Length: 280
Image (spheres, rainbow, N blue to C red):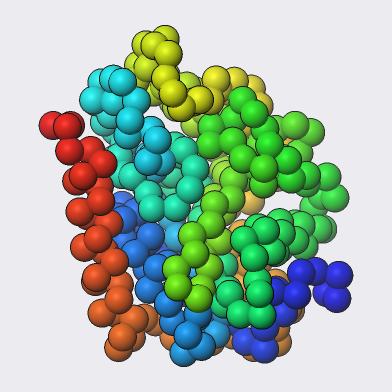
């Protein structure tokens, strides 16, 4: 494991599994949880933390998406398809979350001059070693016609299955990745392609929104010909964390972390109300 990024080798990992909380688990709670954990990790009261999370039938918009000229109609369309809609506090644009999408947050301290690129590089390294027995072909570069395109898109043969964002809070960083494990990547992409068409109607906008081609997105199972479940990938992650550190703790949020979570959750609610204040 010596070739992997230095951030991936703490003396201990804290592992928090929220991948089985079901449809009532709101994505706003996830972003508030990562904020609370970033504060703890950054001040040294928590070890480096890995948190797993799954949200059912949820579209997570970026702040620029909320400024689309016909966003009301776009949100109405998503709701008509059975999706909840929230606006996140980390970078990027709209992504699709459902029970076949596993999200992983790796929460690192920003000590010793850790910069934003190191957080991204560490996550890329982690995904490489996570699936190293299945493929050596995972690449990190922008898939321009995917949804939420970015420099650290992960793809195989030009088809994206994962995207990474990062949020830095005080002295901690939450590096967040979504992994399309099961289902159809192109169907998820078609949903957001239609969302942008409905929300923009061809109007010129100051911000450049993605021109989505559903054929450039796929799930891991589609790309690898596997039958992985979200639980299978969860187990892989837990084993790999132990390989990298030799020690795992599973402490839930407690004390000041709960206070910080409640504060950040309230901020997320207010931010969403403001971002979507013109919507019914």
